[in-house]
Image (tube, rainbow, N blue to C red; front, top):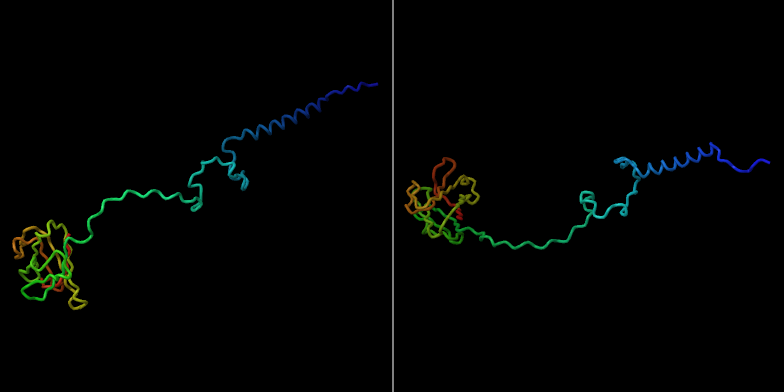
Length: 198
């Protein structure tokens, strides 16, 4: 009677070896992926969730606008020094009716009065400003003639210069001159104006 002792046939041995190589090769391939070999096409939708993202590894730019809640309000900054008062050093409205005197309207003025202004010639107004201290800037605007189109072509200009006659006949202690003109012929003309000093 033939022996029942079984032998491993070469074909069976080769099949078993091939199975181990195949399984071992697959394991190797999965655990040793080349760098940069997986991209967005290889990752299934919703495959990456919170548990697979390292805490505090994302940046603000990784989120859409409005997705991140606003942080708490910061502490208020230090209070700055108070600024200078906003009002002008002086201002005035000068009325001109063609008489010998020039009127600074008290109700529309601060720091200026009629005793500080003279008119040596037509359209030339000289101001003595020593009581105001240092004056650095002047702004002057001709009255718009109370909406009269026929008289809306007036202009006014000003210059500051301490203790000068401005070459216009002003007293030698004048500190500012205002000249009013009619734009139709550029000739000096007595006119109403507003002046602001700082």
